[in-house]
Length: 594
Image (cartoon, rainbow, N blue to C red; front, side):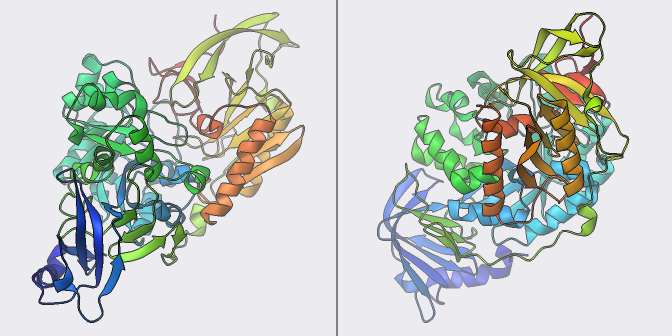
């Protein structure tokens, strides 16, 4: 564990007073002070035992034998960036590989919610993620997942969690709070299980994460706010952001691989003038290709600035605001005495090139080169054998029987760059007693294949928006949040090939075209993560995205849309192991309209 302030307080005081030498001094930089929103030129920082000891105009009195000196040469010295809400599993990486991918981009603190692993492996999986998080050279705090399943009665997960598990996890050293409370209907309805989890978290003095994925800002929203969540990242409009902060919640504005929700909400600050202290920037979900090619929290900050936010204000939303929200203002999120010495050197606050990254007083990256040591953490074999299908599938497993010559069917409508779907309807032909797809109308089939208990269950449905125009199929064992297997395709034969291939390799994502495998991302850990380096996984993910385009899909980051089609807590229409789910009414609905 990283030493506490109490452990090193005497050393920090001695360095600041000039009685003892610092371990590291950064000289003559522009101190980005997120407490005062000032840019203080020609200032020095002195670091001891991984914490800031002195932050001021001249640290020469802190330099002695053995002190390392870094010349900032007028560059900006800004706090390491914090991601206030994210899921490591969405990067298809382990915690260690995720950290190695984002450190060169300036991320030094992450607040992770491992509810993907929780849905597959239960509490033991959460503990593995928590333990790996504690081993990192940067700050990785774990939120105890709140909803496995996310919607009881509407899906079957590989494991279940409840108030007893939450209470147990609150005593773990790296647990910072409760993960996003996705079962908002349960909170609104007064579910004793959901309220019990929130109560256990608050009794431990920790933060409750929110998830209100509904456009209804009436009594239902107010009931959810009364239930205790302290933040929410599901807002997609200015009105959403305003409603949340007015109720005492923090509005978390996300820019992930496929979620572009900052621009629509940041006007609450830039145009309406609301207090920026209650706004936080986060990613939520970033896959490995985004991390390697585009960045992490530095990408979010740049985007917020491009949307009109003052650069220092944007940095506050990615540093001190986040730390304060989790009760860590005295520990991280700013450059100030006593805080963990997480600092970035950059020559431009708007373009935000990450030229040096220091975490806990150690140089971890320079000019994009990772210098941090490799963390040796191995996931056990018990976490790797999780694709439990009863048998190989055949094309006929994807048949949708119907009578007559035409039917009216419900269709899941994909919305580009957003998590919600649309509930569509379409008339489709019937041939030989089976519903036919409509490739010209961009309607193909979707299936959810049960993979936790080997029941042999296959739920069939229809989806629109991917644009596939050849015989193809894509299968993935990343299927938020229950993480069965989602298969989408225009060819039932290819759908069977794709599903069986993932059974063979133990999980991942694959694309078949005309009966041939054209992309594969192997994810052997829980069917969600690879322990390969981020660059290798990103290359495989890039090939997967190219394969989707080769099949006719033009959506931005279409894989993310695919992986959320079973998320039965975000409207409007989803698929689960029990059938098609109307997420506006939170009930099962029929595929064929009477």
